[in-house]
Image (cartoon, rainbow over all chains, first blue to last red):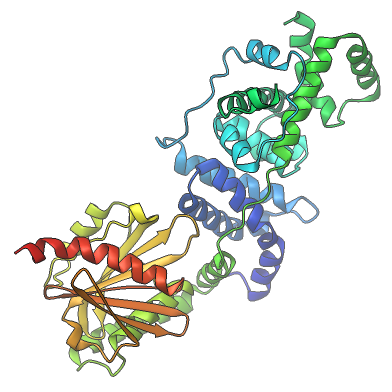
Length: 180
Length: 260
């Protein structure tokens, strides 16, 4: 049975990341209720396996590894996912969007959230881990259980997809006409 | 798109993160100075990354950390939990054999809210499907038909429910979680009427239905009658919001009866 001291050590290690975990869970599941379930299950699993946590490694990456596993198991077949941006002709569309450089506008957080939600989950999570949570490529590879090269290419593709989705969103919202 | 740009997009993205070793970094910089298409792509990727980095952490619902700590404690002390469960079980048996306890119904409902908040009150069935919970409650010999309120339009999702005595009366418990905040609201239903309640702190009237409101510390409990069933909503949030929630749901429940 884990001791009280062990619980305190776990709480000191893990609880500072509650906001980060909740934010990412919310951006993966799209629902506050599901995000709460995922985060709680993540902490319980992490506590059960705390003896495997290696001191000196990044606890945030370790917790995200567990969170990804919990979320994947729960929502693999979820039908409530938002409509995803098709990525088959992404390079052509990105080139068309990029011609002339980026738009001179800043979107608000809600608009960026909605654009991000249109990316397929593996791309969305890569952006969240590296650009939002500031994990290294190596830490993100550990979370995603894939080679670092896959993180590199997935992140590059995700950023192209996000750029396309953001510009599409800006155009639909009338930004393009206001800023052109 | 030129072939070399297609090949280089991954490298441009990696360049944004300052990860390229020196010879490759210099090559990328030279290419950017010579290729306008590459510069546009690089700037657009930088813009997309900047937009993503603006995403701030979302505040977790208040009480989440406390709930996690409580669940960890329960997991850490299974023997103590088992002992507690035995005490609860004995209390249940005792309550079925003995006269009603002195604690009032509003206090008992408020205690449910506090127990949920502290992670001490588990649900017999955790389910988001109201029909499944209604079927479960129908099997519990409550002596009345428990109607599972649908609070979805009000922003609350069903978490599950239980059946058990409340102040020695058979009772149904339903728990909802507000989607936006994570805060829980509890609904209790049991046989009886307003006469079973002590004097309220407030009385309200809405759509011909009497409501009795109790402010018990940080918990608000609102009772109203539906035929021979006494209903209650309780929670720790804004009292007026809870009262309005009761107004909305009681109206719907009472209309068929009113029409008779």
